[in-house]
Length: 320
Image (cartoon, rainbow, N blue to C red; front, side, top):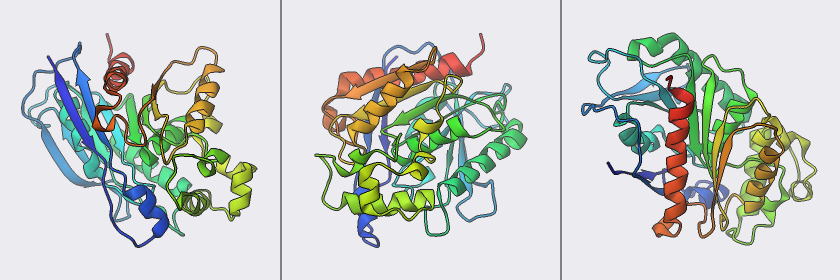
């Protein structure tokens, strides 16, 4: 069987903030070719439960995609929690639909969430608190949707990949995180490479200076960020928390990424290689920018990357 997924991450043309527009203009187009799948559910009637509240804020909503309606399901299924990208300030849970279409057909539930956008009043720690609320909701209500609550996988792209990694590595989740997927997720926000990236668009330095200060709740100058002497940024970086006991992860990075410099990938790769016994896959898209495999420039790597994701879901979520 050949399964093809096409994923789109929200494209925002708003010019409200010049810095945010640098990232929001990027659309992700992911094509997954899965020629070898060992897990086939055989269900053809996926069900969606939309705009489910998990917390008090208006952005605290999620969508649940099931292989079948909860009423028709007789066994609990493993779940993948998707966290959307968009520079921490744009994007939507709607971006998880593509993942749901493929994963539902293979017996998985997908939970795609909205979270509070980054602002002067909301920092990275607040967003992680939102994800905590999601996990508590799943722990307390998952059985109503025939979702397993003993473990879960989390993943995302770009800012969503950063949040997925950061939550999995740094927080004690009510539902244990067994596996992580990160597509072009910033791993080390203290990396001066964000300001030295030869592929970066004009104005990206101002974007990262503004957003990184909001994420960490800091007031670093642009020059301080360029120096790399920013310990508070390291504290909102997945690389700071990942250890030998962290959940296994599949990473994907583009060498020509105009937003997340490849130096970030190199830093994370060096870190995971230093962890004794840590299980991971690290895929490098030699010809890709932030939109991995755009126009099919790295189709072979893309196939192996996404197959690795599905093999990871199978290995770490299923019981044999």
